Length: 130
Image (cartoon, rainbow, N blue to C red; front, top):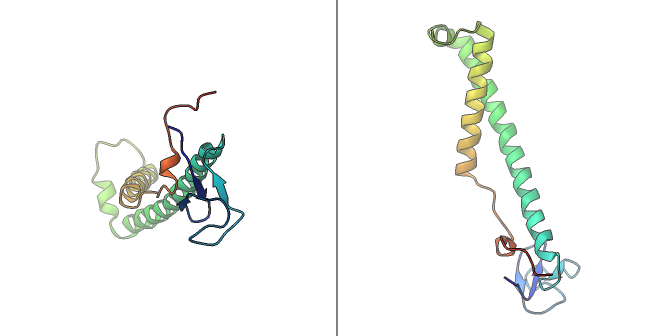
């Protein structure tokens, strides 16, 4: 699919004319969608934003999992002792608990707060013709 028009990389607004962006007023950030490589650039920008978003959520999930794991060790130690099928020492059970909590929190956070795609219109599964 060949896109036409122009897009501002700062505010993601599409417009018909080159020059200053009609929404944010930036004049050095407006790109021509008809040029080769602009859609790939916009897709890469979205991918980088998604990676940064996932990294932030990962750090938050790990922090919360560590706090919850420490709380279980301090106040509810009997929960980990009562789990008989896991043939691990106590400290490995704590690490396993924190890991499971972290993955669960990260998965839930990714579903609740997905990364926004600013340039979803530029993503195409078909390659450009040569």
